[in-house]
Amino acid sequence: AERETLESEMKELQRRLTRAREQEVTTKSELDKTRAALEAVKRPHLESVGRLTKAQDDLHGTLNTLTNELSQTTTLAERVEQELAAIRAAEDGHKRVLQELAAAIAANSEKLRLEEEAHKKRQEYVLRRAELMKMEQHDTTEASEVAQT
Image (cartoon, rainbow, N blue to C red; front, top):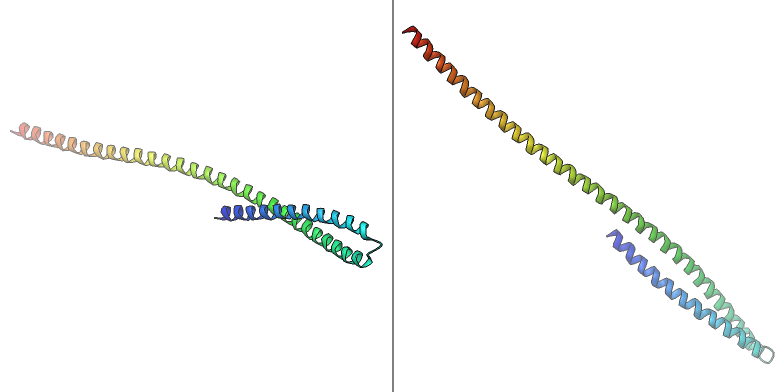
């Protein structure tokens, strides 16, 4: 979920970055046009010069704002990319740990199976030995009875 959030933020930042770049190009173009118009009407239209100067200042302010936003967006995008790389590395580490755990579980399962098999064989051995001891005792008892008669 964190990864999807970061990717979503990254896409949004990329959209903002693209928009900021487009606005920067537009602003620069408008700034160039404003300068040309200012030179053409400088002397005869002093009032227009004032308005154009203000417009130019506004465009400079907008350009500075856009440049700052672009810088912040770029910095944030780089941080998001680093966080995504860290998340991917952590996921790879978790996958390796899970694989190691799966291998350990498989090995332990095999060990338990072998221990159960050995335990069953020991039980069979003990039962057979008890039967043999009974049979030997019975044979010994019969031999004693035969010897007494």
